[in-house]
Length: 179
Length: 270
Image (tube, rainbow over all chains, first blue to last red; front, side, top):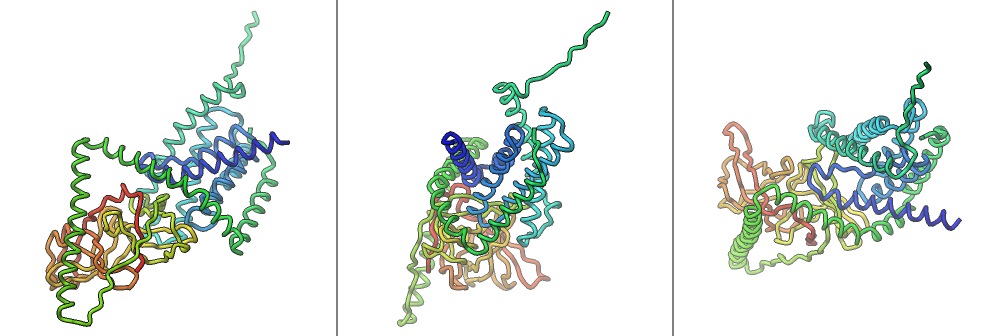
């Protein structure tokens, strides 16, 4: 029981710390480093390697932190992150078949696209932006940078996970020769 | 791998979000937000400072090391001299007015509230152009929307656009939509409105055609509007666009401070 409480507390502190890093540290970095999106990576990795309820908790906590610290409306970060967990779950149930690097890459790229579309729509409709986001060069450059970061992180973390656990080791079917 | 009952999950997510929304609308989340913001501020300040350090070193590496140092030193010097010069001119004018008007009452002294920058916020579609800055002082320190914010050099860098109890958001003078009532320190004492341009420079518009503007003229806040006092340096004129068939002319202004290096600012309370 106490072990579980410690685990959850540790997780809450870790996610909170990540949210503050995203909010203060990464926002001060220059491009393209500033486009590193920890929330997106956190949610995708948690969803991929851990139970989905943990990914839901991570999305909820990370989004809530950013919503409360920033000056946007409640749900600006929360809705896209929690929405992604739901969409990924649907994808995983209906389309993706296993824990391969390819499905991981597809998941992270799709998440990046959907997340950026949602964020830009929220930003566009909640403020009087002079340019429609799909016509803005900054939207596409942000998307590209985030996709590159996501791809790099996916490859790195997948190999790290393969090295540390036995769950995603390659599995080969041997062809038996009947002579 | 990701198997779970998505219907149940969606219902749970909607319920949690609905509850949060109700609490937020009722203001019940405000103490929680204040507490979280209070708890996060020391870390946020430290992280932002590290981030700015990385930003500076990254930018320095992209240029020649010596050149970057020289430019940084000269920029600082120019900012100091510009502020000095503007103050002197304002003092001269003030002096003249005082001589002519014995009952003149000068209220140039304003109370600064020093604040740390804790984050930057950018709109996804205007990532490069619009970058708002978040500071660690808010309503509880007497801050309100419309107040001017100056850098360590005394150069105005923007104005407050939103406030919470313990934090505030400000727009930079270079961000589109961040407008200030301005005046030129030229013969005509030209007045106009400045607006950010692509996140890089400042445009001053609505300048009547007959007014004479010279490159290098110093642009200061005009004090119109009441929230921002007169005499804070905005920048210097870099170019003038003057079409004879138009009612107004406009000027491009270069800011004298480097906004990327800021970690501490002062909000000017009138």
